Image (cartoon, rainbow, N blue to C red; front, top):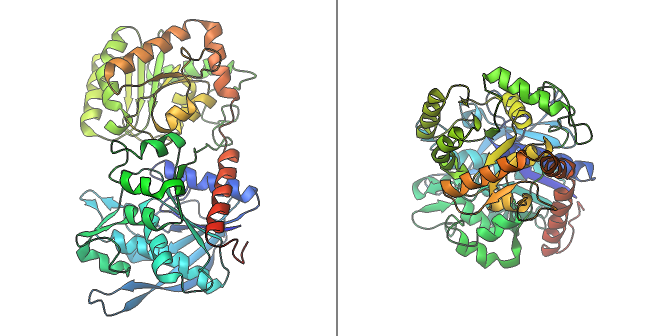
Length: 485
């Protein structure tokens, strides 16, 4: 199949979170399976790691006019280069993308985001038209790709090249909608029926109009059908019925491999795990951490969604009982301040790295004994999968992708690969951590739990096959494979 992905992030070109990793890894896995994948991405200021050879194509992107008297044409350049298994197509429009920040700055979201991401989406559609090569699937990621899906469904179906292109929307996090006030919605050149008199909820409208919709784990898909997790979309998601579901993310097992990780003090694997102890020693030496106690590691966005408030509340008691805590991440200022205060009160026992540091993250995954992910909700999660691969036992809340990947070693002694708690409160979290610490004290039990995690297959091979089946179903709903198939 020929697949056009529209995304605001893709590793290694532009990244703020897991979306970038998912798009890159999925595109590569699909490419290895024989599909032709183009990834359309804004050419932001400061993008590094550009492909060595870029070709250029000029297209005219139609946008609305404030008077509603027609459309105006915006010149855009598409610079294309071959990536690792797929073609990356940078949408170059300096007034939109040559600025600090992807989505906003210190004062909040950019007020012209509707125009910026309309240019991204329509540039993809205009490129397909200019090259006169139909695609089977338009696959949009999150609200930033909503203008592409909405434009396809409401403006571009009249073009024979796009009449049978199926649209798929992947929601990586339903909490972010891309709201556009009505007085700015004109720029997107969409029918008045899109949205209401107040404005356009881009994610909601894309969920409504896409041929198929998915999110990034089966459990999160089920959770999102309830008001608690649906972020205001649960009613519409229920209406979509079997056209909405979940496909669990994988991780790039070449990128995350303790046997080949240059950031680590020593390589190790499930077959030869000895190097993990050297990584633990190295982590403690680098951070001035007392090694005489279980090391609890956390890597992620310091946000209540990720359960860091539960960590902050439970940490003093855990530290008093002998645990050591290493936190890497940035985010909520109050959480950061509270964790720094805890570190000052417990030198050698608590370390807070208030920054983004790729190598430090790898050393924590490798050197910690337990990896904590007490998320209030977690659409998929990558941290727990990386921890398993690095032989570090996860402690997670039973939600979303965490529930799909981690089995409690007390409840399922023969298959458990971590420790799980249900209620989002500090006491339940602390109890799960204490149960995990007890398991660490039994060398045979610990080795069995670690081995199960390290020998599992968290790669993208399986998820890519499930996406291929999703694409085939979407194409069938559009009347069978398009000429590109």
